[in-house]
Length: 368
Image (cartoon, rainbow, N blue to C red):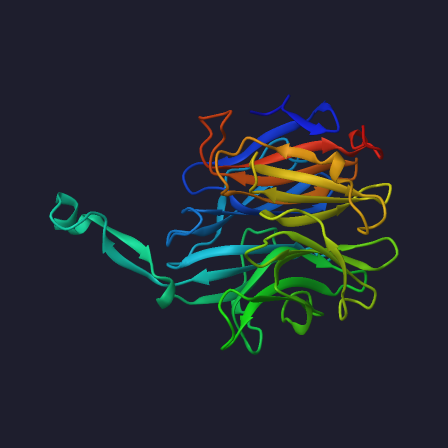
């Protein structure tokens, strides 16, 4: 499937939908960056499903704006479950990759007592035991576009555990790098996250200076607005699990809520700036039809045209889908990468990562 797929932008228009990578356990949690021109680099999870000890992180590349993609190449592949990537590109030509490593997998029999599966060691499988698991965050730097990486360094947040990165690492005009991390307070209630921005002022070599975005929030994306404020789109904790917009006027040290943007089970989000200053927000939809959607704001995130929702993909065959990541190319093409565990229209695809290419001039400034 390479072209001619229709996405709904107030009406049916032609767009391109390209398979980036496919196969069992392939394509989860994509994050894409645009080093310049038509070059795209994306990190995806491979080797296992949503949870699995075989999980690794692969890089895929495009030199033609997402029309074709390279074969996945492993960037991180340890004996643990490597997952939850964040990716950034710096003006100095470095690629920054942050990720989490999940432990707590133990061998158990695939079958039940009294069955043939139970009797043989070759039927042992890795079972994740949450109560015995640990999650550690790392980061690494590549100065050759992902061909090789520095030794990973641990990334911690004092007073917090289960700390994970998310999304695109953003470089601000003063060359400060921003990364979203979220975690739970040590000794605090389980599943109650707090979202932070952490900063690097040495090209990603070290990270610190955390500032709180909000409590009850986790996966968060950032966008520098034309007026130099920072817009963020943050996923809220369960049971709501929606996207909330926040804005900062002081470099991310204080945040003002702009309210809830999506409905329950519509998350997480990414942000891109259109050529005319409007804001493009993409998010995963775990409400039927499953897939990924987009909204546009004409007032820098204050309000969103929900009556003109863009359906980027509506054929995922389960809620395990989405995590869209979007960039705008110099020619005005919007490229959004996302994943699905399967498509109800294209049964041969299985688990895959796809790229949707859409011209921004097809996104009208008015609803139909």
